Amino acid sequence: MNKNNSIVAIYSSHIVAEAAIKELQQSGFDMKKLSIVGRDYHTDEHVVGYYNIGDRMKVWGKTGAFWGGLWGFLFGSAFFWIPGLGPLLVAGPLVSWIVGALEGAIVVGGLSAIGAGLYSLGIPKDSILQYETALKTGKFVLIAHGSMDDIIHAKEILNRTNPETMEHHQ
Image (cartoon, rainbow, N blue to C red; front, side, top):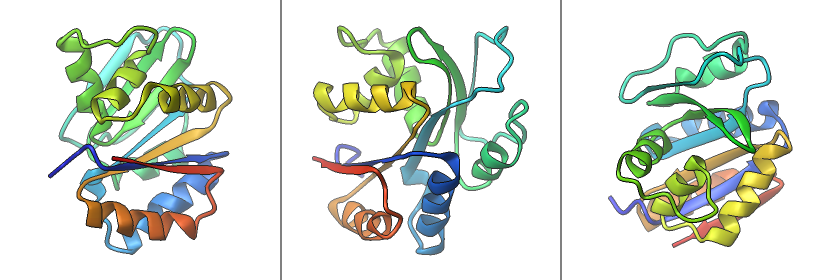
C-alpha cells in the first residue's frame, strides 16, 4: 500500500463528517485507510494524552454519540493536547503516523504533532497549515489514503458529501 496517495476533506460539523464516513463505509471503502481529526470541546482538560493503536476505543469522555459511533468504524484512536490547537481526537491510521513522527523526532519546523503525521503522508506544509487552521475553528478533517484506485473511489464518494474543501495529494 502506498500511503502517500491521499485525499483530505474538511467538514464544518461532526454531523456532516459522520455522514461522509458512513457513506464511505456503506460504499465499501476500506475503513483501515481512513482517519479523522476534530476538536473535543467536552474533554476534561486534565488529560495529557492517550492513544490506542490497533483496537477500537469503546468510550470517549462526554462526547457521546459522534465519537462513540466513529470508533465502531475506524481502527486506532488517540487524544492529543496540541499547543495552539487544543484538545484533538484522532481516529484511524493517522494515530500511528503521529506517534511515529513523535517517537522518531520527525517533527517538522513550525508543524504540530498532527502536522508531522500529515507531513509523513506526503502532504505539503502549506496544505497542513490550512488543515490545522480548520481544526482551530472547530472543523473536522477527514483523510483517506491508499492506492490511486482507493483515492479515486474515495473522491467519488466524498464528492457526494459536499465537503467545504477537498484536496488530492500524491
